[in-house]
Length: 340
Image (cartoon, rainbow, N blue to C red; front, side, top):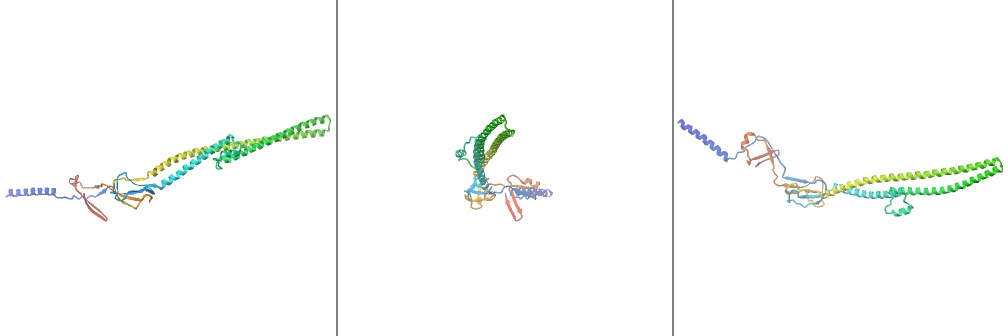
């Protein structure tokens, strides 16, 4: 009797174990983790915005268009870059004009310095295509001809003074002969003294004239030296300006080339494979777009998600690769169960 009861209990336990194993194999068991998790990963929707403000010059896509990585979504002309390019171009052109002007000024200044100018009218006629009142050589040219006129006037005055000096020397010789005659004739002492006084006055007059002439010659020489110094100074100033302008022109030309390439390369490329989900408004060639303005939305293909979750160690035997899981998203205003 006792043996039969024991056998029945053993059979019941074995049957229960077998039934449980069969149930586990057949039935679906939800393993619920008492922990918390975070779903991470990029959204499958990508909003494309304009990098800068400008005018669109190419926009061929429509809603539903398929795009691949590297495809041109749209291109535009950046206003800041456009205005920078225009300003730099004006600076380069200004530098070109200024360099030509300064180089011509240098040429004319060297002619002035060498004194290779005969007449003002002849000089102006030869250089009428380049000569301008804006050039420093124009002001110095007037000073140059003024000095030449003063030199000619001084030369004429010197000739007259030399003639007068010769006449005075002749008078001195005559007065000396007169003095000798007065002495020979035993003239009154007063006449002899008066004759000597007149000779002294004439000699003094000659000396005064010579001093005056030397002073005028010295003034002309100083004026010429000042003029040459002014020309040298202007030549040096022009050389410094030319060096600076050429350097700035070289730098601006390089920057201008970069900006022009940037204008050509202002294209927004697709960063992913996908489909154009929506376009913000009817963009077309010539449309203005603001900086950071949304232009279109792309739905990315096969965008995966990553789920980070904490699960207690006792549930580890039930988790393996390929296991079906149910994800419950429970947040304020939103609740959804998802089977994975």
